[in-house]
Amino acid sequence: KMYGDGPKVWGLSLFQEEPFKGIRMGNIAVLGSNKINGVAALHTEIVKKETFADFYQYYLAKGEKDKFVNMTNGVTPRRWVHCANRPLSDLYTKYLGSHKWLVDMNLLKALQKQKNDPGMQKEWMAAKRQAKERLVAYLKGNNILDADPDTLFDCQFKRIHEYKRQLLNCFYIIHRYLLLKQASPSERAKFQKRTCLIGGKAAPAYQNAKTIIQAIIPASDISEHISTAGTEASGTSNMKFVMNGGLIIGTMDGANIEKAAAGTYPIDGRLQKVFDTIKSGTFSLGDDVAHGKFCGLVDKLCNITAAGTWEGDRYLLINDFPSYVAAQEKVDKTYADQSKWCALSIQAATSMAQFSTDRTISEYAKVIWGIESSPRPAPVVRSASKSDLKEAAAPAPAPAAAPKAEPKASPKASPKAAPKAEPKPEEPEKEKEKEKEEPKEEPKEEPKEEPKEAAKEPEKKEEKKEEKKKDSKKK
Image (cartoon, rainbow, N blue to C red; front, side, top):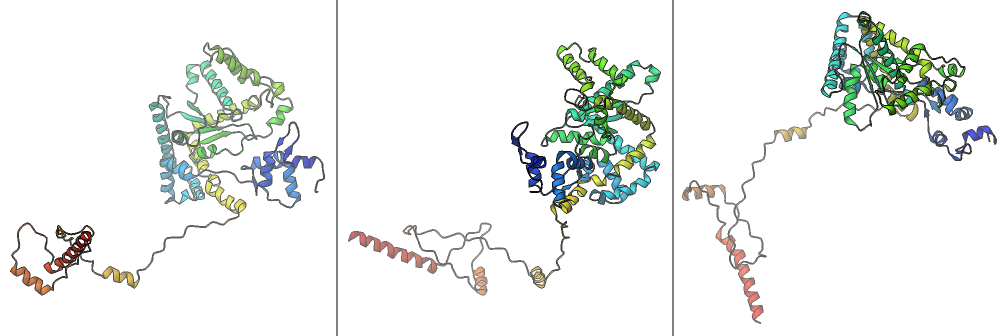
């Protein structure tokens, strides 16, 4: 009724008519959900203005202005600092005087005042060194790489996908390799040494992979987060790296696609040299199949008339290469000043409170779930009651007497004999007199026989029953 039967209704429909008939699962999700979360500020705006623009306007018109919200993801410092990087965790606790920062990362901001303190910087870099040596030992022990802990550790660990742009990182490594090959020995000595590590993402239940990544993250000096602007919803690996004092290289500009569409898309000369080296077969090593695949990657990227589409440089590697190289040059220059680098590392790591899961869960509870926090009550110390005191003062019960051996059954006794009468305990005085009269046998102690009279009673009854049975048989 609000829009009639027109284009807006088609946009809100659960059914798709073109280019093929189908069910719109996204539309069903929006209609059936209490809130729509973009999980990052940039992506929340994309959801509102592009992905579900018709629904966003529809709910605004209905007065539901809080249907679309933004709750940025987070990671827990208990695992990614305290468990993964104990030296850094201990440093935080030492300077703050308690472990409270583990549940309130805002407390870490107090350390920013000491980021230029030589004493703290020395301890900070020592913690980073321990993490790097631990990773070096792992790499060497598993015959992966013989790394140098004195180099800059450059890490990219993400799910392997074109939009993550591991290929852009590879092009830069080749570019750097070419520069080193062309430089004289004296010029080469001026280059900042690097250890470049690239890895993919493992399944959630792959425990060994989790152990490995917990060794890598604390050791990083920089980490690469270079997905094409607008394609990464809310990656959390960058949060883990920065919590451990690693700086990041990341994309920020959202105007790249518009620039490519306008036709301003030249190939940087340095990247062209990389392409030429790849196509020359330098890295194929005579493998024709590999060479064909490598050339296919380069040829597709060089189709600049189709930049930004699946037919060309879909994720704008060529467009971003110059600014990426400039960022890497800035990294080398900054890392050369270790005091400045350390101050930036401290500043970054102690500013991560908003990316803790504690903040995320708190916002979800308040904005999306509509529930209040319910802190666990402190344990109640109960004062002892009078009955407790009486029980505590009562003497302990005497140990139970050992069971007495049963007398031998009469040969004429039936298997279904009646229960035998228990002997009555004699009075204490008679017991004492009996003990004096009867000498004790040492060391073997024979079980006492039951009183004869008590034992004869059930025997007589059994004999009478047997006689009755015999008489009945005779008759």
